[in-house]
Length: 200
Image (cartoon, rainbow, N blue to C red; front, side, top):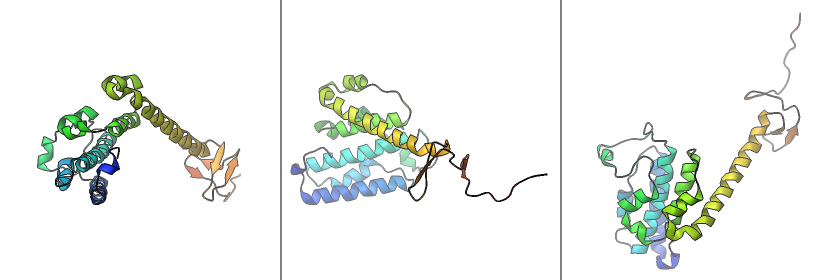
């Protein structure tokens, strides 16, 4: 949450956390929660608290929509969802258009989340594109995108390291040990011992 915590009362911070958890739980349960319904729970709070809540909800919503790959097959739809103001794969500009309160604060977290979500979806992105779209934030945004790239590369390296257990180069066992050379794997199956020997 980028908004200054000093601007938000302690009680408001607790309420924001609870609402965000409820919103995320709804997505996990296969529902399609509406930001407006959860944002309404903070209407009696300060503008800074409302903006911070809205930012957190938008970040989760954007990530979830992009990870669905335009498919609503596993999501429970209600009749009013056909009037959803946001597309299946929204951009930061879509959220700002629907929720103008976002524009009055720092939205770098939402911008970076769009960048991550689109990378996860397999899109090739350039920092320059985001710099053009958000020229007011271009200088500071560049470092945020570079950090997102480093995190992406580190996660990819970690996944590749785990995948080598199927190539015979390195095997990580359940006990945390590693073996090199003959891995003892056949496809997705680990060979534990020889049971019998064929012959004529």
